[in-house]
Length: 354
Ligand code: ATP
Ligand code: MG
Ligand code: MG
Figure 1 (cartoon, rainbow, N blue to C red):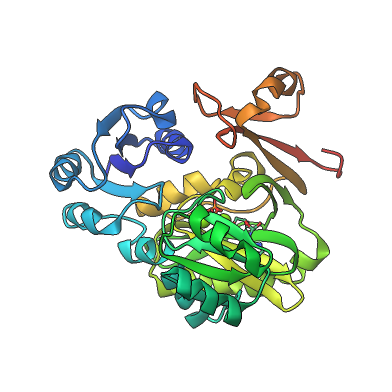
Figure 2 (cartoon, protein in one colour):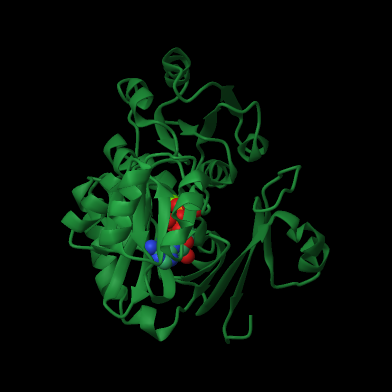
């Protein structure tokens, strides 16, 4: 098809729309917001609620294929869309990835190890969960968390009340705190022909629950676990009959790669692929969604570092532009607020001095 419908109009939608335009496709965004980062680059924008089936029907009439850039949208109303146009990735992937209970259960079925966890649907459950999972642990809402939102750490049992109130008494899971040296993510692209490919794997550093940097190559402990993690991520994509780009986050622990979570979409830890790989995650997502063969995921430089520009980093932008090697990406967001992703910067280097 020639028009790609994208559910969600944030920076991921923006970068998808840029990749789509380069390949000759038009993008039509569907978002509850009147505007957003994707509006500058997508020729069409429909404002509609994610659960407005009538508006989704009208949207379907204007597009040839649909995808999503945001996983915190209820999957059920999107069935209306999927009945009218091909929707990639499949809704089943969205359903699993947006529910931490379904996600961890599924990952386990695919042979991944996860942190010990237990369901917490009430304050009483939390006591039972602390007894089985132990402390320290993290209480996470089952659905709709991102950038560390909807999470509370429980260092010892005395933190339980505060943590439970902090997540708003929502359905949640308690996860054991994993002792890890480094975090990494495997980004997989899978085409409509079932052929999948993975990019090189970055080491991800989070600050306050938000991704700060993704760097290649990762530390040696991550390198030692890559083959296993890539195999798990590929198995997950195959089991879901996935089409598009998917990210799987892992902790490199002494017991091997521990599955953290997966995102059924392009991912912040893959932004480095725009300049750092032959084909970016955005290009390959568009290729997959449109039924084209995937592009080459090979690295183009041995050292790549992507740094997010978060909230108040705005003051640093003039000096970033003064650095000739920096690929600066700004998302066109007008208002900075703490923790808000405003842009990112990628550097490639031959030596490790970038
Ligand atoms: P995202 O924006 O990646 O979707 P999220 O809100 O879904 O974030 P998680 O990925 O679950 O959050 O957690 C954010 C970060 O908190 C992780 O990348 C990791 O650094 C830390 N973290 C989460 N769970 C655990 C755990 N069980 N043990 C140790 N650290 C953890
Ligand atoms: Mg998440
Ligand atoms: Mg995460």
